[in-house]
Each structure stands twice: as C-alpha cells, then as structure tokens.
Image (cartoon, rainbow, N blue to C red; front, side):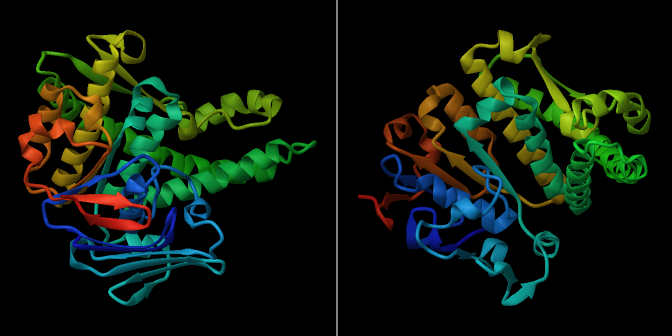
Length: 354
C-alpha cells in the first residue's frame, strides 16, 4: 500500500527515506526520536490530517520555512509541500487544486494510539473527532458539510458577541447551519448504527469475554435542528455562543448497560478503545472495498499478551501495519508480528535493526 516514504523538514527530521514491504514494518527507538512523527506523516500524506494537531504550522521542523512529504500510497505518487505561500498538493505529478480534489481518490487510514483512551474518558470532542475522521473517509460530502458548518458556526459566534443583535444576518447563517448540520447529524446517526455491532463483536473478541458494549448517538440538536435553534435563541444571545448543533453532539459508550467512563476498569476501557478503532477499520473496508493502512502507535506495551494477540488476529491479515515501540519484549508472545521487519529510528532517519 505504501512502499516508499520521504520527508523533508517534517517535525524532528531534516530528511528521511523509508521503504516498507506490503505487510508493514515495526519502528523501534527511544522516546522523542520521531517514531510517532513517521506515522503522523503517513496520515497527513494520505488524509491531509494529523491526529496530533489541528493545523499544519506545528509540523514544520524548527528554523525551516516549510515541510514536504512524498510517497506512493496505493501505487499513486503523492506529494505535499507546505510553504509560506500555502499548501501545494500533487498526485502522479499533477497539481490538485484543493484538499477536496486531493482526497477524492485518496486512501484510508486507521490510527490507534494510547490517546484513544480519550474516546472513553475524555470530553465529547474526542468522540466527535472519531466520527468526523471516519465520516470524511467514507463520503466526500461529509467533509464538505463539516467544513461549511464550521465556517458558518464561527460567523454566527462572532455575530452573537456583538453588542447589538443583527437578526437578519444571524438567521442567514443559521440557515447554512441547519442545512449542513442536519446532514452531519443524520450521517453520524448512521455511522453509530453501523459501528455498534462491529464494535460489540470486536470487544468480545479482544476481551475473550461476553462483554456487552453498546453505542448510542446523542445529537445536541434533538430530532429537529431548526426547531432547536429557535428555542435556544434567547439562551444563545445571553451566553453569546451557539449551544445547539452537531458541534455539541456526543456518543454514549456503555458496558453491560453502565457508563464505561465511570464503571469500566482501565483494561476494559483500553479494550473498548481498540474495539472502536477495529470497528472503524471494518466499516471502511466494507463500505469502501479497500483495506486501510493501520498505524499503531506504541500500544502493544500496554496490553497483556491475550489482548495483544486478539487484536492482531482481528486486524485484516493482508493489511499493511506500521507499528511503533520502544522495545520488543512483547513480541515473543505475539508471533503474528515476527514476519514484520524491524527498523530502528535514530536521530535523523532509520536504519536496519540487528
């Protein structure tokens, strides 16, 4: 899926070249050597999105004007150049005019890391981001609706902060919010309906127990966004911010009918986070008929052998996997990874591991 990766002035790397076989690779190294940055670069190359930050300005190596990423995901040569003049995107040597055009025929990614615990323990933002990352990969219209909704939301919040209420302009932006917000709400509801049985099956598989996992979508705008906005206008005027819409949505995650954040053990919470990401990958494969690249960031050291091996068995056997780790002590009890080559990440690149 990705045979070659090249970086220029990305994060801590001045330059880096990496070759990976079809099955993937294990990247070993000390902390702060850049292992996660390599996975992040793959995610940015394929999806124009980092799981670690919201913008591209922090991805550039210090004291350099910009960064570049190039590679051949799914046999198509892709290149990203982030310069002071803006972002430039290329596919097979041809410029792509926009992010939407670049992503139209792009690949798929599943990212798994220790920060995924925020899906269970953290605020609703983490769960919304999980749905948005999946929705944008499944349907280009989802990303368009999300972008237009966020722009209209920013404009509405600015209007609400003005001393005098400008109702006609407020209503104009609310019409945009209702159109695209309704699309997002309906799309997210379908995503949860599709993810629920997949996540429940993955939870049982990884835990080795009959653990009943349920997901419930909680739309902040209720059954009708237009009606909810009208009812909330006085409250929004008083608080000077929009309080109704998919930017306030959440997902209820329960184990055996009880809130997972409050009642599940840490081991169960880690398993739920893995189950959600495995369900994400299963849904991408089913709906897009393409196997994602799996980026697994330093998660195996936190799992007991039984759960680690169950996770590896659940991953599609033909999927390419990039795995980061600080040590290989866990690999003796996970024979599925013995076929993956190991590269050591050093100060400014990678080298063969003995």
